[in-house]
Amino acid sequence: MTHVALVRSALFDLIASVPEVGRVHAYQRFASREAEMKALYVANIGGADQLRGWFITRTATRERAFTLGTTVQRASWAIVGYMALSDADASELAFDGLVEAIRAAWRANPTLGGLVAPVANDDEAGIQVDELATVLFCGVLCHQARLSLKTEFEI
Image (cartoon, rainbow, N blue to C red; front, side, top):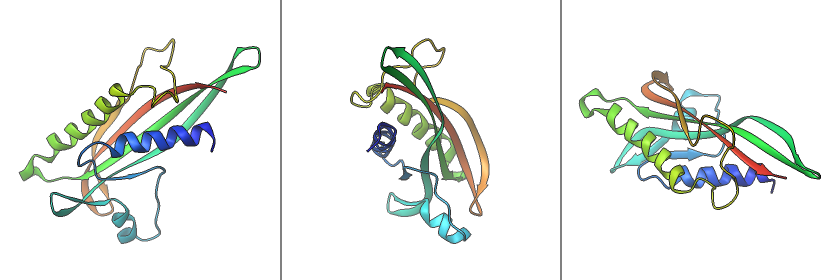
C-alpha cells in the first residue's frame, strides 16, 4: 500500500470516528442514477434514514528535495460533506457541529498515528473550512461543507 493510500485510509478512519457523522467514503463516489447516488450518502441516524455523508479526495501533491536521498511530499486533500436540510430541526447547527467535531478529531491526532508531520512554513494548520453552503444534492436540499487539509511525509 502506498503512503498516500495509508494517509487516505487514516483520514477515513478519523472522520468515521466522529459520532453520527453519517456515511464516509474514502473516495468521491458516483452513480449513473440519482437514486443510486443518493443511496451512497444515506445513513441511519437516530433510527431514521437521512442523507448525511462525506468523501475524501486528494486534490494535489507537491514534492521537494529535503536531504540527499530524501524527498518530502505535501498532499492536499478535500473533504466534502452533505446533510439533508431541515429548518424545523435547525439542521445547520447540527451540521456545523459535525464540521467542528471532524476538526477536533484532527487536532487530537494531527500526525494520523505518525503517518504525517505537521505542515511546516505555512499559515494554515489542520483542517480548514473552505466553504459552507446550501446545495441541491441528489434532489435533496442539503448543507454542504468543503474542508481542506495539507499533509506532509518523507519518502
